[in-house]
Image (cartoon, rainbow, N blue to C red; front, top):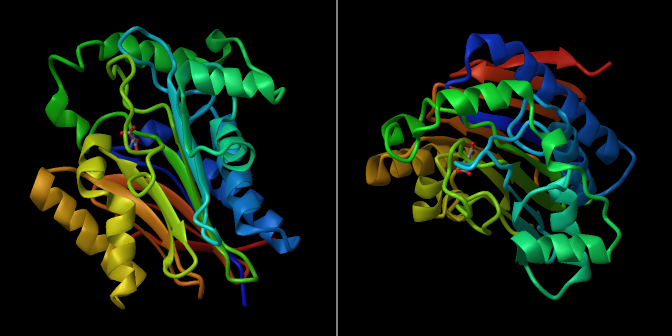
Length: 309
Ligand code: ASP
């Protein structure tokens, strides 16, 4: 069977001046993840590689370039999950790890736990020799400026946050040639979040889920809304009932909007290679490689294609 990868770069009202950067970024990450699949490596390896590429790209709110909390600090969350075994690993509120998705993978593979937070995650990183980076180097001048502009999140702009304001979480889902699925999601969360706030991204069933019996999902959008409806699992429960991946995503995102007034987006792939990229925000940058064709989009119903060279 043919391997497929889908990536997203966050669902929100992406301003025009960032549009080219995020589209180029998701296309490059999809190529990167697909090259791993092409070598015969696993879906798990592919989603980690794709998300690392997005974390390293400062245009996205993950790894380098992440948004800042109310105290002006970086606090990063990530999850990775293997659909073969349901094994998963996650980290939350880590400050100085360049690629939280790889730390999440180490939590999955080297500890008996699913999620390590904050200081514990850092102690674990140290124990396995994962290098740290000075936190200041993860902050971009763009983010520092935006943070200054929007300092009043907690008191003022709660309404905007749903669909219009600074989300750029990244994620990837893949199926490999053996039919195994995996997902990964990584984020700096929401700008000016309270210190210690953890959103949906690192929480299993909300920010992501992968199960070979149905598919893999990575979500983005308003974290508190995604948590309330456990969006990733909700989408897969529709897939399990026989709905298409596109319908399952639409229905679940619509439910989230109707029930808790939350906007967001999701990417999905099934073990048989069906995939979808769906959102209820103004825009979501996404890209996919399927049968050697690179698909990508940003605006609603936009679906462009390029031959992989
Ligand atoms: N879901 C993320 C969070 O709430 C934000 C995003 O997807 O952009 O932390």
